[in-house]
Image (cartoon, rainbow, N blue to C red; front, side, top):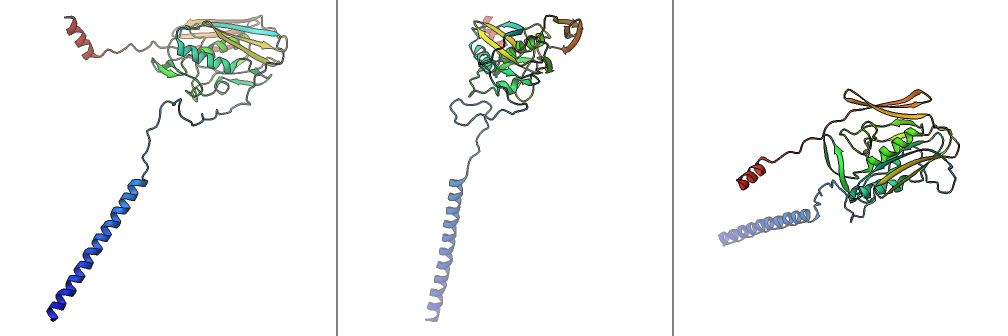
Length: 281
């Protein structure tokens, strides 16, 4: 009887241990399932913006007091004008030019104020209406968001030069461009390269910019009558550099230097070339 009792109690203990292991396994399985159900998966970072997303565009950094448009006041004196031309058949580039022009037209720069292209135009994004067109990247032309707006900044640069305004920030492209003479461009890129000038004219001024039928025009108007008749702009090549000088009343008051590279030649896939040659033979 004692033996039977001992065997019975041993069986009960073993059953209890097995029951405990099973219970632990179930708990572990539940924890594992919970972890799986609550784990968040990381998303791939986007390199371009999706027009269907709902997030808001990041606010433009304010370096200078913001410039406002003025369509009510009179600016009867035209200080300067500069015209460039673009291909309206290039629809995406034309769209980008028009977007930048809308931001800049009728912008007032008060006497002593500073104009920043990037701050005034804002970030070039899909949500802001910009599309992909050719941009300069290093030693080649590639598709990039906002391609074409450098023609706008270059046109404004030339008009500002002729209005005898104080150019404070300007850089040339790394590659040769064709819408202004070499040495006469002003490239821009968000958060890395801006075009800026200070209104040192002694009067409030306003930019009047239009883009129609392939013609881009920037005019600078002032409230006061300012004599800019003796302003002369010249670009000359000096070795590998292009030197732009502005002369006022016979004296040079602005000089800038530009160097350009040739675009990288298009690479050809050797396998593709071999296939084409085999087909021809």
